[in-house]
Image 1: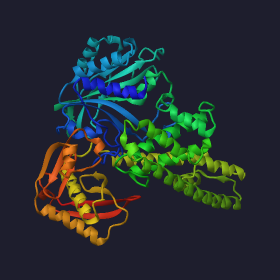
Image 2 (image 1 turned 120 degrees about the vertical axis):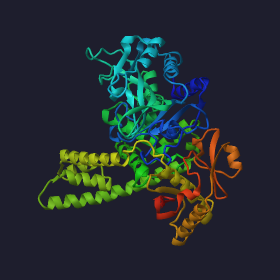
Image 3 (image 1 turned 30 degrees about the horizontal axis):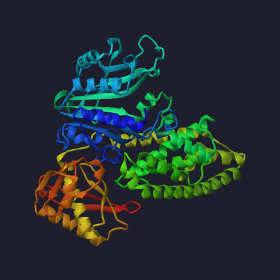
Image 4 (image 1 turned 45 degrees about the vertical axis):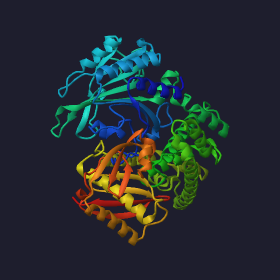
Length: 594
């Protein structure tokens, strides 16, 4: 089975079970400061998991684009990826364990043809907070899974959430392929790292809410959230040892072999380099091709994108790839995915342009790094030394993007050495600080859907309308990020705003607030909403039926919410900063009064 077949088979199966097929949301989360990218299928659906009504109903299925960047340095092994597709089906207060488990079993055994004897499952073992999930175990047994292949595991294995300190959570049941390896011991189970069991699917049952006191209370709306990674599943179905050897990546690997004149299997070093280039370019294509307009920069999503592109270029240099290689690979991926994700074809010109620009910037950075290396080595040798210490080697990498491998090669040419152990220590310390900062920044977990963020969300609509009035209708939203304290709004515009323009925009927003206009929400089709003058931002994320928020004669936008009931709730609006976000994109930060 090929990837395109699995994607279609999954959606068709759940459509037949009464699920509405919804399109993938953007990779850039809307108004969610807790994550840089959409990392799971549930992220775009948080408001609906918390009780808001979804326009498409209570049974949904999708294939969600996801990016996870916590393990960038691990990419190059057999399984790590930065971009992946997550197949999911959802119940928003509709069906629960019986249906979800039965459908999972049917899809695995009937649709995918996996023999029952190769399946094993795990369920929640229970603890002092919540009881053992015998219900799920009984349903699996009724389906046909033998009791000795139903494993009861603790919270760390079979529990989801809450994503933050409080919120929805519950037991999950995970499905595994038993690859036939001998057990590692008498207690061998899917909790082992011995490699006998390969996870293929996960059904989460959100049936509790963890409150401020740490107690678990039954949820009024019980939800089902499932996830099956497309790449991992295809790897298992095709019997491959690595995701890079499936039909998803082999066209890219074949192209890299042709461009480099090297064989994918000729050495571990070449295999790793080709995997890194193939993964990072694919992820960069999806981030650049997203309708939200992220481009390489030194902050947030743009920084991750810059790091991915530069790492791909660096390993491409190791392979001896020509300057045109990244563009060739990007075109291959756009062609491969254009029928599934039409935004890639729509934004092809931008993707290729930004890749080329970033390659050129990196080339200039390497030149600066070379000059710095020459300076450093000159002074070390002048002082009678012949070793570059770890901190200096790391500074060359961190500040100038100068790979330690190049530092080592150049040092050797001058009869010098590099303290690699000290470099690794400096690198590890930097990683720990970065991870601690990320955990602090994103510790909230789920997006904040408080009354204050609803007001700030409404303020972005007023701000967008004011910008279009002052700067021209070519202005378009390129992204937003909202916390309880402030809003951040990115929009397409080629120059800094003047003080007068900023003041005029602020004045228009405050006038709309002073008018105390009701915010009206209606459901409509995209076509009808557009014909009535609604602005449809990032419309690939919306289904056939959408929510349209109208604010008098000021604003009409297709949007998922949440919003204030009346503009008067915002009290007052103040722009605190206007700056560049990336090439051709400006950023405004603003606050409202309590």
